[in-house]
Amino acid sequence: MFLIRSPHFLTGEELSQAELLNLLSYAEKLQENRNHRLLPDTPLKNKTIALVFEKPSLRTRLSFTVGIQELGGQVVELSGNQKKSEDPEDTIRVLQSMVHGLMLRTFEHSTFDRMIPHAKIPIINGLSDLHHPCQALADLMTLKQKFKTLKGLQLTYIGDGNNVLHSLLLLAPFVGVDVHYACPSDYQPDAQILMRAQHRALLGGARILSFSDAKTAVQNAHAVYTDVWTSMGFEKENEVRLEVFKNYQLNLEILSQARPNAIAMHCLPMIKGQEITEEVAEYKNSALFQQAENRLHAQKALLLGIFNRYHQKITNQEAGSLWA
Image 1 (cartoon, rainbow, N blue to C red):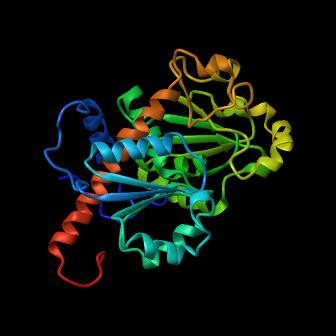
Image 2 (cartoon, rainbow, N blue to C red):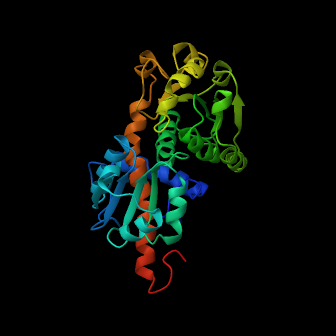
Image 3 (cartoon, rainbow, N blue to C red):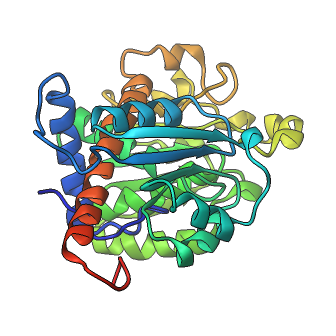
């Protein structure tokens, strides 16, 4: 039985190396056997999971909804405009009286910090201003499928030092992937997250290197990754960002500096002509839509790992704290 020790998945740091690698392998098995009954029963059967969206979503909404349903669970969905403003401490206590788990897509990561001390059900971060760990799971799965291994790969990220880069920094080097990144000076990744990522890179035997120039950063890369220049919540900065990031576009010239078989990556949605050209988006080695599909499979593996452990705790425990 595949188990994940932590009841929550907020930054990705909750997973050990073995758990992360096992999750990726299990996700591939789930993908291969999607149309067959790989699991006679699942810990999500007759469970209801709340999906709460304070930010709009396509991939997160679809992948969690379909994934939970395929694992025998039910979904109740709430959007930001469907509920009143409420303290996170109160929200989680209401939710856990009615549902068995929560996936939250929110703005401030501190929302999770305020919920956790009161949480008696699993909480999964579907995206916050600082982290996008579910996306990183799909990205690692994509790299493994493309190159058959993770150890020794070089992933180069160019663009905004945002939540997507943070999650790549925390998870990819931890399993042996070197990460090079090139961001404008005022748009670097968070210093504290970078410090944690550097420590984890040592544990994974990988390196994290920063570059000021995109062309230099992509030299010898197996994969070149970018994201939108203006993330949700920063729309007022759009005009300034268009000027600042103009030399960080993922185009064929930049991609040509990487390895001949290098893949192009993007978490989507993309704005063609800004952070990525249409030629690269439609390029033969583009992995954009494979990444999107892998959100489903990676998150199903994540859900199974967490809820297998959750089910085991519920079964074995008569009293006391659930997570003791």
